[in-house]
Image (cartoon, rainbow, N blue to C red; front, top):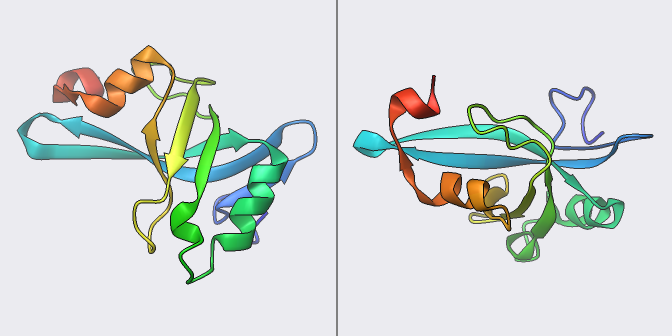
Length: 121
């Protein structure tokens, strides 16, 4: 774990489960609102080591971080658990953001504007 507890951690690896990095998953809502989920992205252990090496670095290396993995959280109402996702760093001072996916539904979730009652049933 990157910190004392899983709740505080932004990275962790658990035997038998895999390696995970925190990311943000933004959902645009009608009326100019945005819903942002904090998610775990399951990544290859090599990517975890790469992320760990640059996460707290003030150099441009953090801005080049790209994580290819799978969502490790169930995101309702879309049931996105296990779908492929790419998380990239958009700002030096923030957590990586889920920016794209090969999954058609997650691509829609990231690109479209959703009614409040559909995104928050």
